[in-house]
Amino acid sequence: MRPTFLMTDPGHFRVAYEINPWMRPGDWSADPAAHDAAARSGWQSLKRALEGAGAEVTVMPGEAGLPDLVFPANAAVVLDGRALVAHFRYPERAGETPHFHRALERLTGIAMVTDIEGVYQEGAGDCIWDANRRLFWVASGPRSSPDSVKVISDFFGQETVHMPLATKAYYHLDTCFCPLSGGEILYYPPALSEVALAALQAHTSADQRIEATDADARAFCVNAVSLGRKLIMARPGAELHDRLSARGYDVIGIDLDPYLLSGGGAFCMTLRLDLVSQPAPAARCLEAAA
Image 1 (cartoon, helix red, strand yellow):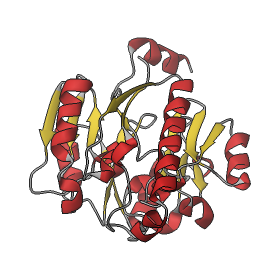
Image 2 (cartoon, rainbow, N blue to C red):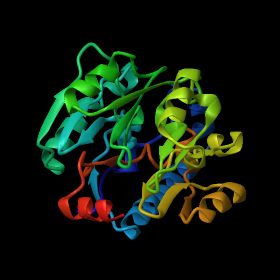
Image 3 (tube, one colour):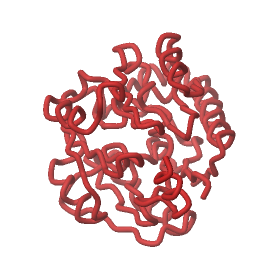
């Protein structure tokens, strides 16, 4: 099965309010036409990079008044053809839910869509599937409630590892934590609580942990999409690029500066739809042989 992603047309994207420390509506309003053109260009570059890496991209329409609809990673957690639709903490984003409902049901053929009630949980932004370890890394913090860990575990029936966040700046797990296809974890240590760091150490070896610098994190490079040996992210610095290349990754840097003004990067702008908890039989045979 080809990797499949949901993206949202960026025509209505803008930075219009502040619900995280990165959002700067004043910067956007200083030159909205230029930012809009750059946002469209960056979105197209990301879509082309995903398709160039062998992925299929389904595009849902944007909606006036919902500028953050362009970040579908926060919309749901999807595994084995089932989707758990997010319950957003901020009212600015709550209006996105019915649009993602329709997209998941009509555009993608997801078999089951369920809402969370009474518990804040913001999709794959705070619940990242690790295909190598076959578990969910599940965060709580500025956006998602600690109770969401049990909700995820009960709904999907998969192992979950609780990763409490430590700062307001890195408000979703995907801003500071990225499992790579080779089994490594790219992460920004100051964004994770001691509990989360201990959990990470318990599930990884030292050579699997790749620490991002302050500059890497501020540039939203950790908010990346890993597809095989392709690693797609906002433009990395030379040092990070070289470290990842030395591990065999083809690093594809994209100018996503307009989205950084809203506190988002490459991973935020996509929602992976084809993830499965168990590999296909042929893949299991290859695993056993390895």
